[in-house]
Each structure stands twice: as C-alpha cells, then as structure tokens.
Image (cartoon, rainbow, N blue to C red; front, side, top):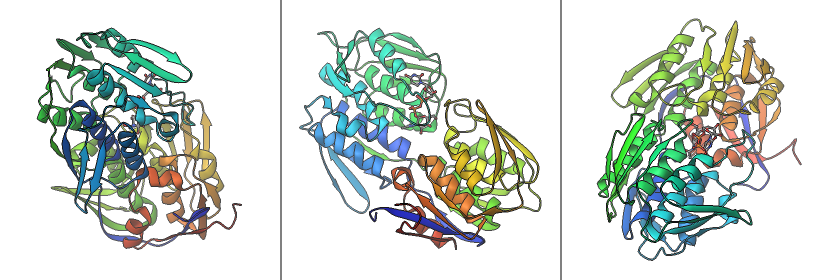
Length: 426
Ligand code: UD1
C-alpha cells in the first residue's frame, strides 16, 4: 500500500464479467488459532492474503510458531509454540486475536492475552468468553490490561455453557477450549455461522469429538490429544455478497465464482426481493440488475439471518433504490458510521438508535469520503461505483484487512478504481 494513499473510484461504468471469491477471513482466523491446540505441521489451502491473516500469523510466530507460504499452500508449524502471551501490540491491531485464548489455555493451562480495547462499531466485550472458560474451571483476572487465565492443575473440565447471545468468536474460543477439556461440554445458544461449522470440521479432522455443528447446541467430548491436519478455507460469503450487490448499483451482469450459495440463502433472497436477478449454478452465482428495484426492510441477525457484515453494503445499494427502505441493526449498537459518509455522496438516510431509514435518491454524486471500518469501506466503494464523478476514499487500510485484491477484482469487472496519493486528505 502506498503511504497516505486513497482509493479513487470513477462512477457510472456498468460491470460485467467474472470474479473469483477468496477464502473467508473469518474462517481463516480461527483455523489458524486452532493450530495452537496440537504441535506439528499444518497445511492450509485457499487462504486469503489479508492484513488480518498476516496479523494472526504474526501472533502465532510471537507464540513460537513458524510459517511458510507458496502460491497454493500456507504451512504453519507449531512444534515449538510454547509461549502463552499475546501482546497488546498485536491484539490491538485485530480483536480476533482473542481467539488464541481458548487454545492456549486448553493446551498449556495458562494464557495472557491483552484486552483488545475500543472498537468504533460497538462495545464488543469478551464477557461470554470469560464466563465460559470460568465455568470450565479457569481462574481469570484482568491485570495491567491483560486477561490472565489459568486452568486448574488437572486441566479444564467440561461444563454446561449457555450464551445470552450467540457470539461467533466466543463459540469458537470455547469450542477450542472444550476439545481438550476433561469430560463433556455443552454449549447452548451457540452461534451457527458457516465459519463455526468449518472450524468444527477442522477440529474433528484433528481428532476432536463434536456434535451438533450448525445447530444451537454443541456437545463436545474432550479428548487427550489432537493432531495436525490439512484444511481448505471455505469461500468468503461476505465478499461474495458484496460483489453480488454491485450490479444493483451499476447495472450490468456479473458472475461470482467459487462461492458457496448455501451460505448466502438469506442474502440471495433479500437481493431477489430488491429486484436483482440472481441465478445459482453449482458454486457460481450470476447477478443482474433487473428492471425495477424495490425498497425493502432488512434486519441483521445471527446466521442464518442477514449478516451484519453486509449491512453497510446493502445500505449503499438501497440508497439508490426508489422508495423508503429500512435497515435494523441488531448485532452491534453503533454500526452506522458509514451513514454520514454515504450522505456525503448524496444519499438520504436518517438514523434513530438501531434503525436507519433510507429514502432512495436518483443518483449519488462523487465526494471525498472516509472509510470508517472494514465493511463500511466496501459500502463506500459500491456507492462510488454508482455515483457521478470520481470519489476519493481515505483510510483504506481497513479494506486491506478483509477484501483480497478488491481494486483488481472490481477492475476486471470493468470498474475504474485505483489507488493513488490522497488529494483531499493531508
Ligand atoms: C464476529 C465476526 C465479525 C462479525 C460478528 C457478527 C470474526 C473474526 N468476526 O465477530 O466479522 O461482524 O461476528 O457476525 O469472526 N458480545 C458480548 N459479549 C461477548 C461477546 C460478544 O456482549 O463476550 C456481543 C457483542 O458486543 C455483539 C454481539 O455479542 O453485540 C455479537 O458479537 P460476536 O458474535 O461476538 O462478534 P465477534 O465474534 O466479535
């Protein structure tokens, strides 16, 4: 990335062509953390090359692991991963670093993980992770900004855990802790995201005993030991959903390749309701604008509901759909930071609490805008693709955390999008 670079998007070009979906960031991160559960060499395929993945690899290295990459494969070797401290310097770069807490505690009986700190989209506490581990026998205190966790001498033991809310990373953390605990752990109101099912499948390949994957009750029988494995990362449903929305804004027709349509059922249903023509053929999904788009009401919810990670992008699309749309954000209390930026592009959106009301406008207009978080960045690109003129997007480092080669991928579809030194931002 160029220093102080911005993304420039010239709107008004129809998109057409094919785009290949990368591996899912949110599946790669827990899969990498799981390598701490058993020493040895792992092989990963379809890993997206993203800053967040690099951060998790940096963290694993800090804990004593090593890695190597070729074009196709990421090799991770945790034979010498003996350290148990995840430092603030790394955790502060990425909240998902907390995913090493469960594996470290389960395998080494102790872990010191820096508290992740603030997050613009909401409070994002880690109390579910903490309570679950405590129920499994861990002693946890917060000291000097670190979660200091210790398992009893005989290790963690199975427990009955009931989540107040189906948290994704808390389910993953506790599942990873439970696979090496003594006895049976039951996690109720567990999250059901495809990334959790994928992690469960990896753990089972390693020798874990897990039942109920993809349901709200997980039953895990602890085993003494696990062994390394080979994993192919599942396709990124958020990246796929982002590209599927694009023709709704720009017109044209695109084919999303190497996706997993089964993970996108609610998203596809919503896009069809808006009036996009979506056709599924194996792992390919064709998206076309359709004649007349309609406003809709969207409510984000845990999987299989509409993903909060596609809320900002859907808002960009609805900004240009005639009529009144409503989006209710139920997962994070402050995930409307993109609204002001979309309004700078000419959108007409008002927010009250967790509800955004969108009055579709005929045309958006280019303006300098700021990316406020990862998914907000993608929504600004979508909006800019449909806006008149050249939009300059600053703070694009967020994008590199979660969208692989986005300029190149949109460019191949006919978009005019490039990175260059900022003009409007010092
Ligand atoms: C994961 C995803 C993120 C996505 C989110 C919701 C990864 C790496 N990140 O984040 O992209 O936006 O799921 O689909 O997979 N909560 C608590 N206490 C806790 C944990 C969570 O109150 O201990 C609350 C959160 O504040 C939030 C809600 O639960 O309001 C859901 O958050 P959660 O599912 O935990 O999100 P993450 O796992 O952090």
